[in-house]
Image (cartoon, rainbow, N blue to C red; front, side):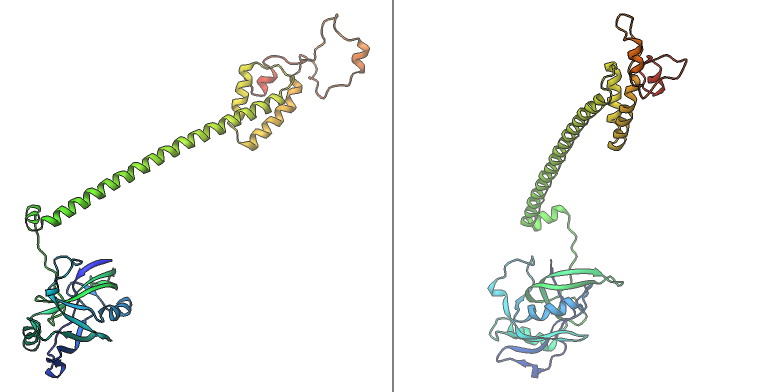
Amino acid sequence: MTDILETEDAAFESIAEDRIDREKGIIRGVKLLGLKSRNKRDYDTKGVRATAPKVLANAPIYLDHPEVANKSRSYRDKFGNVGPKVEYRTGEGYFGDIHFNPKHPVAEQFLWDVVNHPKTFGMSINSGVKFGKANADGDVAVEAIEILRSVDIVTKPATTSGIFESEQDEEVMDLKTLREKHPELVKSLLESTSETNATEAQLAQAKQEAADLKSRLDAMEAEKAAAKILSDVTVEIGKAFEGVEIEAALMKEIVECACEMNEGTRKKFTSVMSQISPMLVDDAPEDSETAPAKEAVEEEKKPNYRPAAKKAVGYQKGSLLSELGLKK
């Protein structure tokens, strides 16, 4: 929601005397809110049509705008109220009655201006609105009037018709002038900025701490997972080479290579090693003192694998391992 001090093309356009009840303090059929603004705002939207009649009905009327949109108003500045019924007219805007105290100090001046100079002053809403997108002409759509604090009588209308919108003054001030004219505003802005910066710094620090903690947790999880894989692979490879004497350094390299494989490849690798390991057992006959009888050897079941003729029998260091790509 955005606070604004303006409305649009709504004015006292040559109001006839029969629409003015001076005794009761009523002006009937006044255009409270139009559809287009000099401030490049478009009130001709579905959202405004739904909200404007509700918020305009019985709205208080004050003399002049406050310095800040949501600033409390003085009772002395209260002039009257909009009537309970507000009517929307297609292509024109919103109309209703104005009720005011005929004994108010400015009542006679107000009525004289309405009749004689209706374009020299105007009515302007003090509201909180919801903005939408701008159209091709640069007019910003007002999607809804969410809060209407008052309808104010002002001396500088922002419409060609006169009395219902305050044109925004653009006053350019340097910091020195701003401090001199609005010291409390500057103080408030500085305090707000300081609090915002502190909050943003705390938020940034919290985010960094959270990121660091996550990194440490991820590292711990990764280390834990790697340790488990190493343990499992060591057991698997140990079983695959059970009964085979392999140097510790070579076994370490085999395990490290297996750890770098994904699970599927590692299972295939372990299976192959299990089939190859029996080939690495040295089955050459021992010396005569421990060699079994020839008859007993002949009766033994032939192993699944026998080296080809004319080749060394059993495990030859640097031969089969070399062919398998298992270098020491």
